[in-house]
Image 1 (cartoon, rainbow, N blue to C red):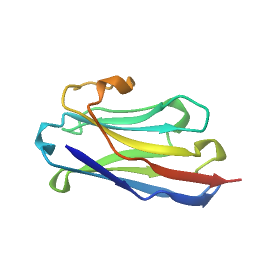
Image 2 (cartoon, rainbow, N blue to C red):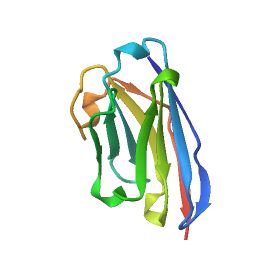
Image 3 (cartoon, helix red, strand yellow):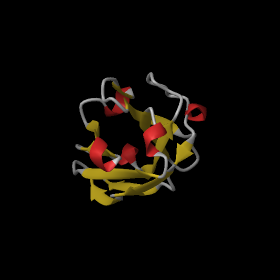
Length: 124
């Protein structure tokens, strides 16, 4: 499985961005997809997760009501719509996929596949 992210960039505080993550290869083996982020000098942090069926979605508290994870099964693509962005959302955002997890997992070691990361910078 290969994951390719797009959609990062520079935005002012209060603005919006939409990240995309397209899966290719043996995408049919994916059971869950998630977004993580890593700011300079910090550990990789869970952001959002969704099962491949779309039945279970979860978010870290700091992005609830601002970020929305969704998927297009036909395109094997997962999205992260980010609204009301804050300076503290600045980080490299990574898409992750698992062929094992069928429940919301915040543990990055549970994800088999990772994208290359896309930079999101929010100016205050």
